[in-house]
Image 1 (tube, rainbow, N blue to C red):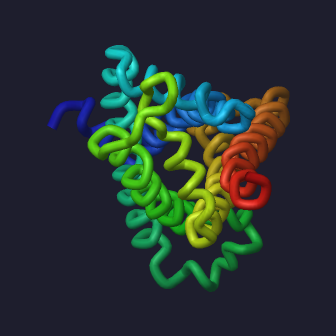
Image 2 (spheres, rainbow, N blue to C red):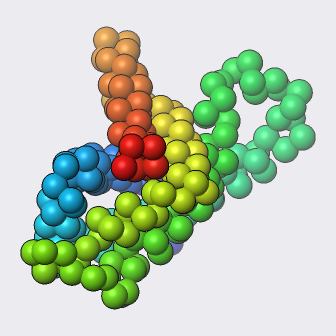
Image 3 (cartoon, rainbow, N blue to C red):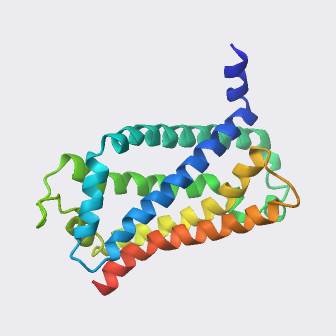
Length: 223
């Protein structure tokens, strides 16, 4: 086994992979949120459908999608491995160590939060991505696939709105812990800068999760 495989199969190496892929996925969340803000335009969905058409047909974006899939895949796999290793390492001493007194709730429940997000992601991908790429969507007045109508219809279903909002709450907590931990894992941990990183992490987590959660609530209650 080479030193590279030894390094990245160790706990530290896996945490580095988690940190890098996590920050990469944070950048995706920003781009995805900005694009989806087109849903709030009062134009019958034309701007959102133009944006969706561009994202679905641009060769560069289609290539980046595969990088995104790999990012998600590595992040999920490494999180499962690290969670199992932590459980094994703690063994029967977890309860007696009173972990709730030593770490915040979200840091002890990253596995649970990640599972909620994964379930949502699978439903979300099928409902929008799969049906947009491989389904039959009616064209809008600009002859683009009318993904806006599919989104609006989906967000009129209470069960989906609840799932969506619950997933964004889970995402917010996941990001609060993950954002700061990623910088710490990468060695960017200094008493001068850590408070700023922590503040940015909180702000980023709240803005991103609230932004995504606002979309189904807007359609369900106001459209």
